[in-house]
Image (cartoon, rainbow, N blue to C red; front, side, top):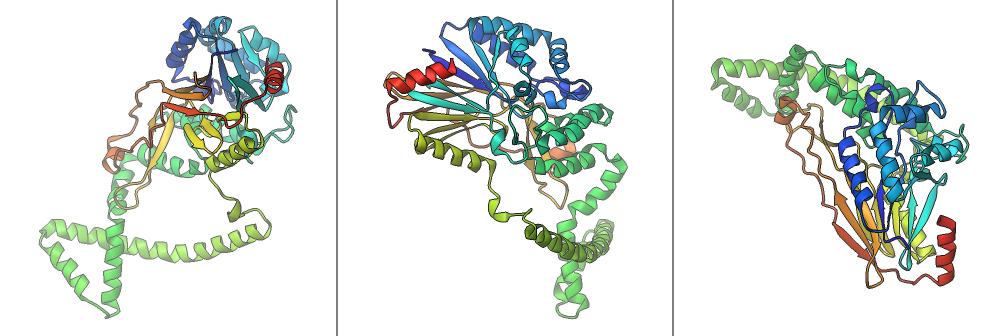
Length: 444
């Protein structure tokens, strides 16, 4: 029986033009070489989105695989070398769904000692327990494959990637900064409009326009209070706040006069925005009511992606007590979560990650800080009959791509709660010999 299983996912290797750059190639090669040299009886499982086949728009079918081999010869040579010592198994994700749709991929990948399982999920035995493995796209309405295995059964996410992600890869280098290629790092996708606005303001906007508008945006909150004081004074309700503001600014001479002019300009802008916002609010409210009437917008169905997978894991643990670990990827958010019945593992991504940080001043756009959280998960049996889940980070420095202005108006973000390096779970029910034999026969 295999001693340990290693899991990685969401590499997204390949794609049009700038999407073809692999920032973590050196780290991935080092990881594969480590597995090539190991003495333990191990298996590497890439649980989906190893490749970015959706992001290739200039070639079709198996020509995409030829393009991958041509673009990354060193990587495929290392796959072949590692796979000769440590078995490597792939299951399709949504971005490389074509791996499930064309049987020819099985033989092509086998040339590099990569075993392709054209299935939604697989299982592995660890001691007396079972590890359940999937990519996770079937639990995502936007990326669920309606007829798994059918090459023409593409979800909405496929068309988004063809029209948005791939186009971003082709256009990224035309910008003042090569930032559009990182669109795949923006999760969830609903953050894309804010991310694009942020990059436009801080990177693409004409510098003189940015620095002319910056004082108004920085002083917007103060300007709102100024508007309130002005309204109270104009209505004859309370003149003290306006008097205090004028006296305070008067202490600073010409600088105070300049600030007063900016606040006055903000007053005009704020009143204009309020006039525009009122009819827009009424329109947006009516549109939402219409969408709910047609069943398109359902607030009761909104839940975080993590909750979706935790719920699925609970149901699986309850229906089959031999399953101790539920492994998935897809969301790019690494996590190891203990719940009743077992452990839920999100294998994260090797792509760049982004963290949204709101501006500390005014109404400036948010800043998306970039960093890497390369990782792998090792699952093995313990001597006392449990299952150990080891979470390992692969060190890679943050790219430090933020401009001085972005750092000036935001605080440096924290990286979030640390994932425990080891989590041990003990199955509530031992697997019978017959179940073990059936599982081994189906998965080997």
